[in-house]
Amino acid sequence: MAIWIKEPQKFRSENASVYADIESLTAFAVTTAETIIKGPFPGNLSAEEAGAVAAAAALFEADMVKAKTVAMANNTGPYDFRKAGAVKIADLSNWYGLDKAITALLPANYPTDKAIWVNPKDYFTNLTEIIASHPKVAVQGYLLLRALDALQGSITTEPSSRSEGRWKTCLEYLDTSQKFTVGRFFVGATYSETLRQYVDKMAANILVEMKESLLPSLPWLQPEEKARAVKKVDDIVVNVGYPASLSPSSSSANVNGTTSFLDTRNPESLAAYYRDLNITSTSSFFSNVLSARRHNLYQTFSLVLRPADRHLLGAGRYPPQFVNAAFNSADNTMHLFSSLTQSPNLSQDLPGYAAYGGYGSTIGHELFHGFDTNGRLVDESHAFTSWWSEGTVAEYSRRAECFVKQYDGYTYPVPGPDSVPGNSSSGSFGNSTGNSNSNSNSTNTSTAKVNGAATLAENLSDAGGVRVAYETWRRTQSVTKDANLPGLEKFTHAQLFFMFYAKTWCDSYSPERNAMTAPLDNHAVGAWRIKGVLANSRAFREVWGCKAEPVCELY
Ligand SMILES: [Zn+2]
Image (tube, rainbow, N blue to C red; front, side):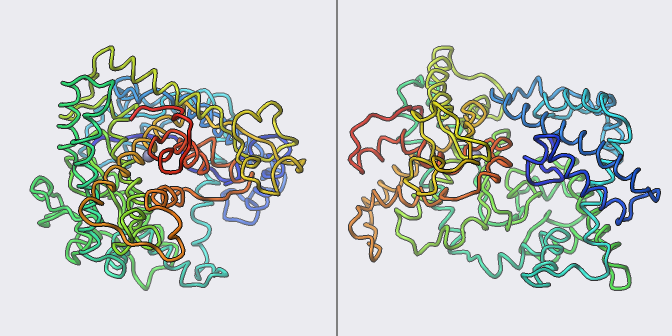
């Protein structure tokens, strides 16, 4: 298994606007200085020294946030594995000793001349410059503050109690220290073999629809490319529910000496996995927390010695309660964690239009990651290659460009002095929903634009996902007709399919929250994952009687 080095997923403040201007940054540094003085920060700093460390760290972090925002916005093309990859651990030394940190975490017998993957690569180029342009105390202070953030909650002998109750805090600690053990009980309490088979069947139906109907119908894909695309779909391994590695390749490569690596249902397998975890009733809470963190890190890094196991849900990194679904285009595997297949998201008792409109579209979305801007560059034997003709690529790009322009025209509310003028021709969901609290009468809401290029892969997957789920559901209706839902009889089942799709992304976030998360997310904000997708859906237009043609069509 390869090592991927990614940009930071989290910063100290969850509110990105903290990093946006010097005034809020100063306020943030003042709070941090108080933490430093009160907390177990090394060196017994005076108030003045603490203020200087906090200010330097805040400026350094603000530059990192900026670099990440820029790197995410520029990370628009397909991953170029060849360019982003070919870096040796030893070559990382100009990143402030990052090579030493990584080498220390890796298993001793891992070769240091092995290539690692770096993505987004712009971020790390910029990081080198950022580190060089800040004083050492800024970087030191930042690293110590991050460690403090992560650990200070565990320093007291009693886990801090929250308003929700002490049990929730304890469960959170258990979920990070023994996530697969928690997973075992989560699966036991919430999952059934019937549900697992039901999801498996949904995914199988969707894959059949993709092979037999959707791929052959694409006007821009050549016949021999269609045949290879069908083979690629045939090759997909769908992992459903919980990690249970039973493939022969994983058991023979086992380094734990057990017969199977990480079977969430199996207590012996879990005991072997956590064998080196040292948690005792005589140790302090803090040292137990440290021990659990060390064990998790060790287990994650030890995965690099294993051959990738295509049959292991989440590649052995994520537990069944991980709230997500995923597609790994590098080895052509789909991962459908049991977390998302719970009520109210999915149940085997739902009518088909609800199941396929909601979770079926999610399965379809993951499937289309195999054919998005990155996935299309991996062929049916997992080789990274351009396997389409120039003409096909040109037509794909032309159609994809339409999606870029379409989503570029969408906006979302963020904090600010006033709405951006001249944006009324494209949709701003604050205004178009008829919400009486819309931007027009607010002086502190502005709008930001969706980045059509940075969100392209997700938008294409959304579009393809809904289409394949819809067509799969239609096919199931020729065998058994769905039941009506009480109170919703005035809608056709096809209309309800799209209402259940919309429900998946129906959310409401504050402008502050949008400003914080949207620029760092490669998904468009929820409202446009609904409206953008449906503006492109031919079927949606038919069943709701819309006259206009779809804005963009690819899959
Ligand atoms: Zn996705």
